[in-house]
Amino acid sequence: MPHLQKHNQIRTLRVLVLAFSAFIFNTTEFIPVALLLDIGTSFNKSASEVGIMMTVYAWIVAVMSLPAMLATAHIARKKLLLGLFGLFVASHILTVIAHNFTVLLIARAGVALAHAIFWSITASLVVRVAPKGRQTWALGLLATGSALATVLGLPLGRILGQYLSWRATFGVIGGLALICMVLLAVILPKLPSRDAGDLKSLPKIINNKPLLIVYVLIALIVTAHFTAYSYIEPFILQIAHFNADYTTIVLLLFGMAGIISSWLFGRYYDKYPKLFLIIAFMVVLICLSSMLLFAKTPLSWAILCMTWGIGMTAVSLVLQLRTLKLASKETDVAMSLFSGIYNIGIGGGALLGGLVITHIGLGMIGYVGAMIALFAIIIYIISLKSSGYVKHL
Image 1: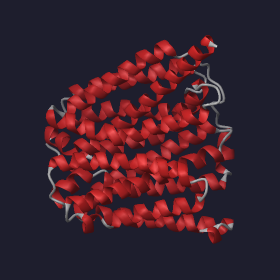
Image 2 (image 1 turned 90 degrees about the vertical axis):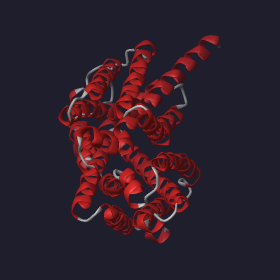
Image 3 (image 1 turned 180 degrees about the vertical axis):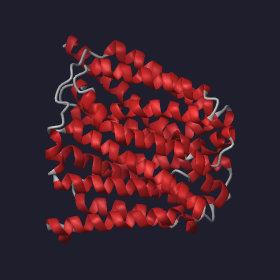
Image 4 (image 1 turned 45 degrees about the vertical axis):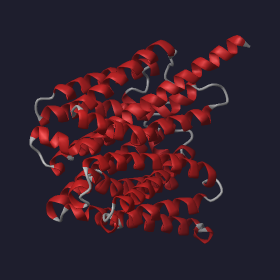
């Protein structure tokens, strides 16, 4: 029994470190949102120009997720993971010392490539290393680590950036990644590659119409969300005219909403799966279309952001779970496509938001995002109707 207990403790530790790694990877993807104006000041660029950082990052992840996963399918998972962390850390060092914006984009491209493969393999990896019978718990913890990036990563990264510099924030992220790398080198077994999937899985996914609908929905709702969310810092400062400290509070509230949403998901989704998703979609739509309306007082905007965060997290959780269920035998390929499409939405949203700011105005980003969210809702309802489920709404 003591041997079994120790074995389970080591497996639990492996899950915890991988979940913290998910926190680090998601934090570094989204942290430009919290530091947009500071980075722009360093390189004499506007918020919309700096926003291209997120577009470049997201589209590299989108383009490279599947090919990189397939190219590394036969590499032992531990060896691959440590290589990814090596690239991640080196790219953050380059980020810290970047002397111009082009070098910064190159550094971010390196992080994005590591990110693309990391999220293609991690869901199946965390299930393999979890204690026996606790695979669902392990997946939940991985999702929690990912969600905490917005709960803690963004506000803490912003605070660090405000008091030291944006470079310090990226330096700390790289340092934490190095610690995870060392821990994983010690506690992970060899983990030979298995069930990674290959190109033969693609026809099955292409012919899986419910899964394709999930992909379309995630692309649209993430584009809608990031059209506005990518520029939440300049919106708060320049449109709502709240102070810089309030921006940090808003990012914290937005992240906390993720925890509330996870609780609501666990409590209600199994009982009302169709209704849960349509409500989540509607919440995102209403919040995006109400950004200007609620930008009157700090309290009203805080309520808006909490509600918006709950809705968006709920949509992401539901569509990720549906992907795993609809492609249970092609998990790595399906999740690499999910990650890629999600990042198409991030990059597309950041790019579209930048264009809206340039040609229409910063205050309009919420309305444009809401139009895309409405399109997603229409597609979802049509899909339910064609499946005979609409009567249950």
